[in-house]
Each structure stands twice: as structure tokens, then as C-alpha cells.
Length: 451
Image (cartoon, rainbow, N blue to C red; front, side):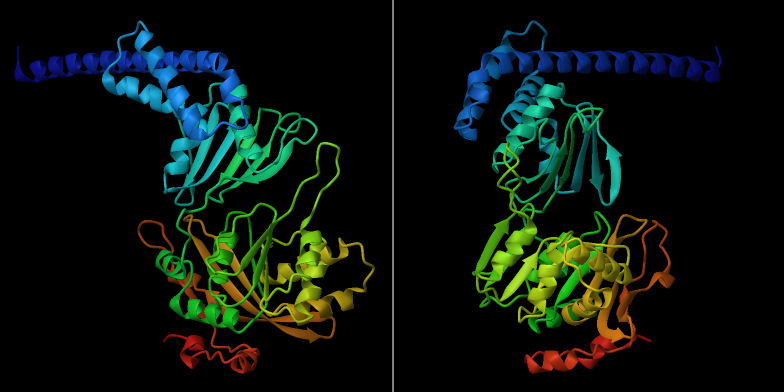
């Protein structure tokens, strides 16, 4: 037998062994998953009186579940290694005490979004890209149990009468849930994760979200009590930037934050946090953002920070900005700074007040000073792509002037990442004199176009 033939024979044997070994490992993994599923269902049945008690602490529940799980794992007939037993116990504790199969994604700092499309389909976002995972829930009841755990902790509910809800996790991560009959393929849960350590402006500069010049300018605008709106599409980083920009507010000012689900993490000493409330089971008792904005005006605020403006509260916020509450901050969904103005007009009309369009535009032009627009680019990165000053009215039109614009001309590198940064246009905003009156100076170099 020649050397080439021997090599071919050895390769064939190796391929057969690899296929057989892979098949064996796959069958073993499936068997272990079946064991875990069986133990999980038995535990839910045996400990139902404990698991569904509202007043039991996580530590107490974890002890009971851990003890019962270990006993059941050792009683199984299938031979398991020490590592496999520990893995089953850990995953079942996560399933019952924690947040099930998404627990590991909540711990993973690289995961920024978790998307549960149904009990058997879970996607995650990493570095701006979406990936499908191999994790699944046991069944629909398992997913509903996790959902109930999330919403009940903050006094909210989700059922057939109220089949969708916005909630939050203890770390501030935003949760949206929608169930049957509105979701046809099973309960859908979307979690926008928030970092345990809030991003700082240095983090945004390092990630390329903004430049050093732009960060200095934003800091000066906040200290100089400029009214700022942060705009962009879904998932562009508006709330993250709002959190960072809010950190520039001086520590001696009284700040009131108003949100649907409290996410902002401000470190100042004088912060009042308000959160809207959905209607109760009888459809009564709802407290919307607009109610909270109006109430906040009676709470002697130095600054009002609204998590997102999406309805009639826009009118109350504009009036607040025009009646001495300078330095207010908020976010709004829009495709460009110009679209922000159109959306604000529409939202003011949603307040149900009959106002001529010119009067609305005059309110907007005198209330809003600066629009910071964000976008998520093709490479998954989030950037501030435009900063525009609202200069006032010219006839019937609100005029905007771009102060900073993202430079797309730098192109992309060999890894498909954008090279550009947000650069000054060379134009200086009209409100610099107002900043000067507040004792805030902005260096001329901030607006100089780099050669």
C-alpha cells in the first residue's frame, strides 16, 4: 500500500470517528437538556406554593430551589460528570430564581439588547449587530413566569386586559413586553440593557460617539442653561447621551426627572425621580407624562429632564422652557433635526389645544435652543451626526444652523468601521452671549475647522 493511500485511509477513519463522536456528544447534550427540563417541571410543581409567593426573598427562594435541585440531579439514572451536575443546578436556579435563559445575557457586559421573540427564539445585540442564540425557555408558561416576575416588582401587570407594558429591571434596563392576543407567536420581550456603571463623556469619546470639541461644547451648553433636545431613531443611544449630558448639571441645582420607566442614573445630590403610572385593572388611575410635567412645575425645579417627549406633554414642556425653566433636557424620536420641529408641532396639536401653526412654531423656536441628532451607522456604531442651533423664525419657517456635522468623507477602514468624527462647521451659535452671561466661556478653537 502506497503512502498516499495510507494517508487517505487514515483521514477516512478520522472523519468517521469525528462524525461518530460529534453525534454522541450531540445526543448526550440533548439528554442533559431533557433531564434539566424534567427537573425544572417537577420543581415548579413541587415548590409552586413557594415559587409563586410574592413575599419570599430571592435568597430564601434560591436556598430552597438549590436544595431540591441538587437532590433531584443526584437521583437521576443518567451518569453525569461533576461539571454537568453543577451546570444543571446553576441553570435551573437561574430559570426559577433569576430570569431564566436570559440571565447570562443580562450578566454579559457585551450584550446591549435582548430580544425574546417567543419561548424558543432569543436574539441578542452585541457591538451593534444582532445574533441568534441557542438558548430557549422551557415553554410559554416559563416565559410568562419570568415576565410576571419582572413586572410585579415595580407594581405593574400584563394580562389579556392589558397585554403590553413598559417596565424596568432593578439596574434600570428598559423592558417592553407584549403578549397574546396581540402577539400571535407567543409572548415577546425586549430588554434594552443599561450598564451598571453609567457611561461617561470620556467613554463616548473613546467609542467615537462624539469628539472632544463637541463634548466641551455640550458641557458648556448644559452649564449655561441651554434647552436641549436629543433626537434620533430607535436604539441610537438617545437615553445614554441624555444620561451623560445630564451629568453636566451642577450639583447645587434641584433636578426633576420624568420618565415612563425610570432609566436615568444621575449622581447629583438633589434629584427627584418621577415615573408615570399605567391604569389599574378597572382602567382608572393612570398618570401620564403630561400630568407629571405639569406637577413638576409646582415642585420648584431648577432643571426638568423628560426621558422622552412623545405626546401632548410637548406643549407643557415648551411652556415650561418659555417661563423660566431654562436648561431643560429631553429626547424625541426623529430622523433629522428638521424632522424634530415637525414632530414637535404634531405633538403640541395632540394636546388638544386649538393653536395656529405660527403660534406653535414661535413657541418651539423660542423654547428649544439646540438639537443633538444621533444615528446608528451601518457598522453598528452610534454617533452624534449633527448638532444644530434653533435660531428663530424667518417668516413662517423656523431656521436651523448646523454647528457640528459628522464627516462621512473619511470613509471606512479595512474592518468596515467608519473613520470619521463629528467636526465643527466653523459657524458660531448665536447663544454664546447668553452663555457668557451665565459665566460660561467657550474657547474659539471649539468652532475652528481643522485643516
